[in-house]
Image 1 (spheres, rainbow, N blue to C red):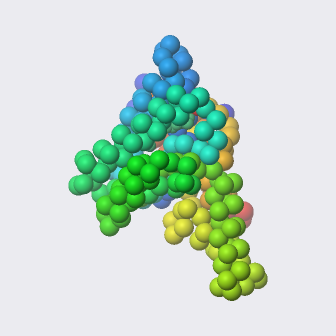
Image 2 (image 1 turned 135 degrees about the vertical axis):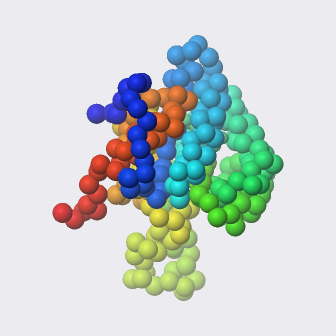
Length: 248
Ligand code: FPP
C-alpha cells in the first residue's frame, strides 16, 4: 500500500526518532502533475525543480548527511527533444544559481552519472560546483544525472578489469568493497531510505547496488506537490521499520 497522508494530520515531532543517514529520492510525477493542469510536461519539471530546492534545503536543515536525487536517467534521453531540452535548461539554471548564490550554504554538491553526454558548458558547471563546495561541512547532495544503476555497474566492471589488466588487482581480491569503491557513490554510505512519490512501485534503475537493503517508502503524491511534511511522514514510516539486513 502506498502511504497517503491526510491533509489535516498534525506535523510529527522528529526529535525522538532515528533519522536515516542517507536518503534517496526518485522525483517522479512531474509529467502527471502538468497534465492534470493542462500544462506542458516541462511546466511539471519546472515545478519539480522548485520542490527539489525546497526539500534539499529541508533535509540539510534537519541533519540528513547524504541526499541523492534522481534528476535524469540514462533512459530519459528517449523523451521528446523539447522535454529533454527543457530539463537541460533547468539543470543549467540550477547549477548557475548554486555557484552564484549558495556560497554560504553548507551543502556539498556531487554529480553521479555519465557526464560524457552533456554539453561542455554543463560539465564545466558540474566541476565548478563540486570544486567550490567540496570542503563544506554539511550534507552531501548527490544529483543523479544521466545516471543508471546498470550503466554504473558497467563502468565499475570496466574499471576493475583495467586494474586487473595492469596488474594492480588480483581477480581473487575482487569483493563487495572493491565493487563499491568503483561506483559513483564511492566512499559514501548506502541509502537507508528511498522515497518514491507518485505511487509507482519500481526502482527504475536507481542505485541498484547501493539499495540492496534500503527501505522503500512509496507515496501517493506527485513530486511537485511534495512538501516538507511529506518528508516528515516518510521519516516516521522509516523509523517504524525493523531493519534486519538479512539477519533475524
Ligand atoms: C520524473 O517524472 C522526473 C524526471 C525525469 C525529471 C526530474 C527533474 C526535476 C525534478 C527537475 C530538475 C532537477 C534539478 C536537479 C534542477 P516524470 O516526468 O516521469 O513524471 P510522470 O511519470 O508523471 O510522467
